[in-house]
Length: 301
Image: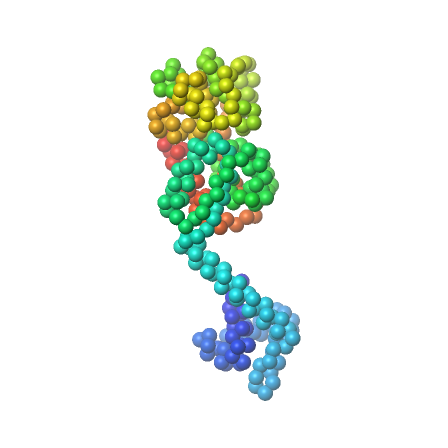
């Protein structure tokens, strides 16, 4: 950004001489002259004609002057926007995520953003995973949060965390006192499972297949919120990851019992943005709040 040379050039045009421009800029004339000479050398053409000790713009100089004035006007606008964002008096940030994360995780993020940065407008959208990834890749949202995001050259990962899968039961359930359990232990109870459209289900199916365990769930649903509610009401054992039920565990309404089956990998939660995108200050605030909340939940266990 050639802020100095642009300002020097415009001031020379306004003042009509290098000496007068230097006085207005509070620099020595040689500094102004050097900037003008460097600019002429870079453009390969003179910017001024010297007529009777006065400077007159050449045709090239007229072109550069129009650009310089436009640049300064635009830069003033940019500075005003930066000043507003620095104080976070205004700004907009958008995040797309899955319905389960939206209901279980984002309320805390939204509350903290609103409390700390009331000038920021948040747009939080729940989508299916394919639509979510497309929105992030095409820049329709600033960031996206999802489990098991596939490798995508159009996305840049900002943060990842791993979340173990476990049996979710109400307090007092036969499994609730265990420090860990297995899928084989779970199938002896009514099972509430996510449908195949959720990224967790293929992980569970793979582990069940490797253990040669067949299951007949009593309920399948796309809603992890519904799974938690049914489990709280004693409808069966849900299989979810620890983040999905973190609020319920803290409230004491559900118990998370880790599954220790070999080959059962945790779910990977990723916060992503469009590759090559530069996040606004407001979007960066949102990102930092998401990361802080995730890390706090990890520590809380």
